[in-house]
Amino acid sequence: MNRILLVLLLLSTIIFGCVKSSVDPAVQYRAQAAIDDKIISDYLAANSTLKAKRVDTTGVYYIVNDGEGGTGNVLYTNSTQVTVGFTGKILTSGFVFAQTDQFHPSYVLGAVIKGWQLGIPQIKPGGKVRLLIPSRYAYGPYAQDSIHLPANSVLDFQIQLYGVTN
Image 1: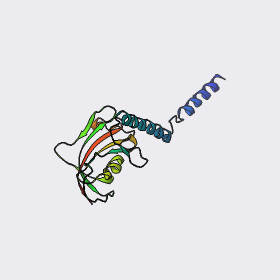
Image 2 (image 1 turned 135 degrees about the vertical axis):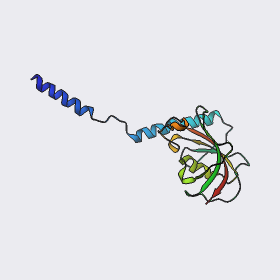
Image 3 (image 1 turned 45 degrees about the horizontal axis):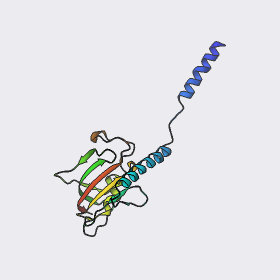
Image 4 (image 1 turned 90 degrees about the horizontal axis):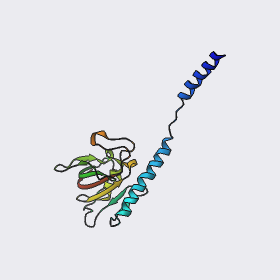
């Protein structure tokens, strides 16, 4: 009798030990989106002089100061190459994780984070834009150890657009 109980206990431990106890990814996504949106809305409320506009319904906000929108007629596509100078910070701490000082890298627009894909087309060559990007449009739940960026970071980019090539 004891052996049967021991076998049943062992089997139940194995079966219940194999059951996944993770949270649904969609639930985690929505929860993080709510956190990010609150961080950005609180920041904008505390800095009410910023004239931030939202890109559609995405949660990405952009700020273009008067006279800093750039000039020209540009059609942006995923294959558009942009030459930029930028400073990237974590919105909540102000920690600068990336910055271009003396060089201006070029990127294919379709290969950069989604926040840039949505925000850069708000300006023309020569323009400057500030982007407030929720984590879901940046690196999401993935830490970027090489640049000391924690998972789920809400980002603040200052970008100057030097050139656009199609």
